[in-house]
Image (cartoon, rainbow, N blue to C red; front, side, top):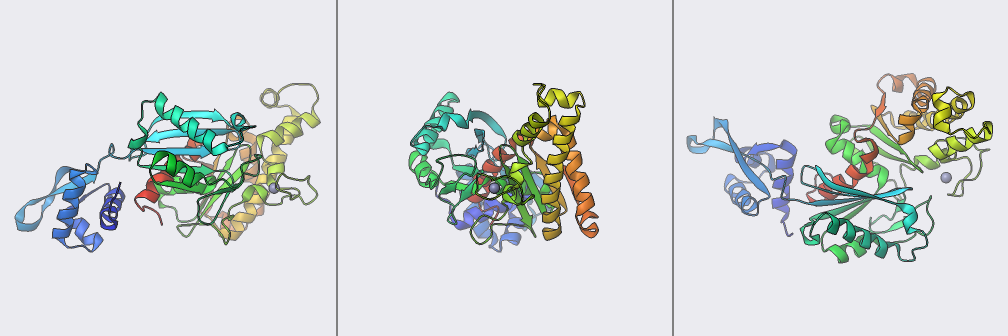
Length: 379
Ligand SMILES: [Zn+2]
């Protein structure tokens, strides 16, 4: 695909407005009407955009204006969400409607010396299973719950997984699939999805938090994603909540991930109750040890988040993770802790709620990354 910058800027405006006339495109792009007519003709010929209904207002020479909109079927995006337990794959159209998806446990990659060759194989199998020709993919978005380099080309480290270090994922996938590949930290892709297609569409300051095997966060501050000076901004899982706590895989002691994940709640519960009952069953029975373990986890998450709330003063916190569904007390407890600990002027404007896409937040994040980078929807 070889779209020019001006073609991309027109595609971006059409995407932002949903449907728009050529006259309005000229107005918003600063291009002349004849230039817009030429560019839109090229884009219509290549089926990127379609002509729709006429507007009520008359355009030049008294003619009615035709509204243009994006052809949902023109683009195919591949999203890859690399988490602690799973890698998810999905194919979507231009509207980010998902057609096909699959999920592979991360343990299939243990003892595999060449992780990226294995990843490429998994993608090929996924595409073949669903009859998708690789050359029809317009862009690939990869979200990873780890640390990536400043240039956004390499996975530098996944704290919860061994041997996922210094992997040139962008160049390997570009060579294999011959299309643009974009890489971003998972929490940031989730924030991007919330901002562009989720609940955060009109929210300038928010935090997305997802709890799986690890804890990731994406911070949207004054409409901008937070990256930091070395691309590790938003590392919520490794914020210290108890300096006397045990050592984390990252090397630090008492990180939030040592308290706030499902696995940690299970461990805490098992230490308090040796009857052999599962955490979820015990929770259903209002078992005291299960309640204590959930309260401790919710409290730890709440402490970490109330510090973040005081630092960046968000309007919303969007939370996701299976533990909020199966152990809702964790959600209630973290909310209570934030209300108790964060500054009251910050709490007045704050709402704490579930994320937009549940379990699929990272997958929508990866797809949103592919689309938004390809047509420059987001800087
Ligand atoms: Zn840590």
